[in-house]
Length: 207
Ligand SMILES: Cc1cc2nc3c(=O)[nH]c(=O)nc-3n(C[C@H](O)[C@H](O)[C@H](O)COP(=O)(O)O)c2cc1C
Image (cartoon, rainbow, N blue to C red; front, side, top):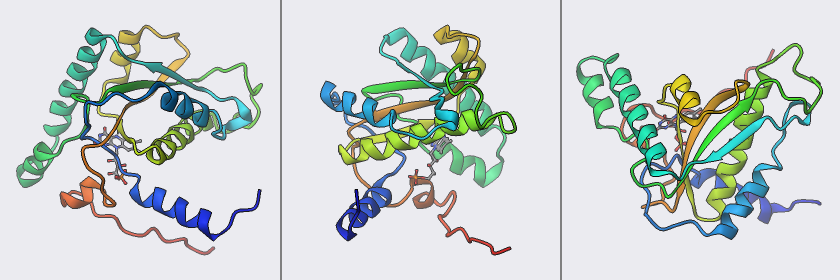
């Protein structure tokens, strides 16, 4: 497959309009779209082709409520680390769409996978977590091409998530994802708009 400028422009638009979404419409996500997302995630690269990501689709209301309680406690604790104007600014940020997101995924990393037979991770065991991050990004971009938004939530106690979801000991909590149709689209990160952290270009230094 050879790509042309049309493909590059589309990719550029997807990258530009991929944002972390925290505001969702309640509309459900169609099952064929969810299947397409699942298939796309499986195309992500991974160390030794180990594909260490494990995905739980969280639907049970009591589990969702427990995740929200976990987030609220972790967010209160995080907020307490800031002072003055910064504390006020932090308090005004919406940092998860757990209240509305119709699809919610708990993502784990299998840290002792048989798959891949250890290839590529003997010297850098963190490559398993990196592989999961790449699968999440693959899902994120694909979701956007279906006009969906995805929000990544890390303000959670990972041990509590592991206990709550009763996963195997070798599964390490990676992230909680909120997915659904966004209330609005934006080409600028919310944290940039809110004045918390602006987007600046990253240099490539020559050595
Ligand atoms: C590893 C990771 C964890 C994140 N955790 C959170 C989170 O807990 N809450 C939140 O609102 N956004 C979270 N985000 C989203 C970032 O805030 C967001 O990606 C960043 O501000 C840039 O905005 P953009 O994704 O819209 O470009 C996370 C993003 C990544 C990559």
